[in-house]
Length: 126
Image 1 (tube, one colour):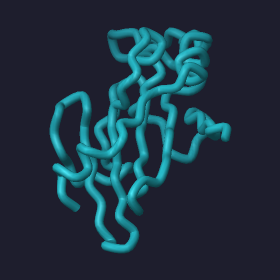
Image 2 (tube, helix red, strand yellow):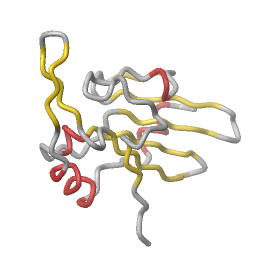
Image 3 (spheres, rainbow, N blue to C red):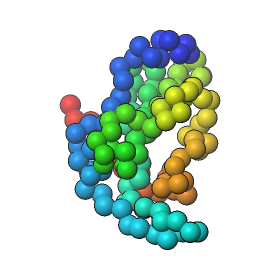
Image 4 (cartoon, rainbow, N blue to C red):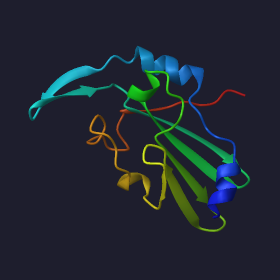
């Protein structure tokens, strides 16, 4: 996959519903090894859509959306036909070949398994 082509695809941004839900998710404070962690009920939101035969997956952090941020933390582009994928780390502003289970998450969701209820999936209407 060519990075220039991927950058031309429609950008995925958090919806109004996602931002609203993130703002309603009040974190619980947990003392951990000399610092306080903020644990959200849903620490991560995932959005996916297909464009030009590329599956785009965007990962959004609850604490970022609660402060009105709309950009994802990480975007993954999957080309099923070409059996290829590449990711973009929006926090570090760089391309990566890390698969979802190898992404470096912030400490607020670091210990959360991708299969736990700590992730909220929303379906697009329409």
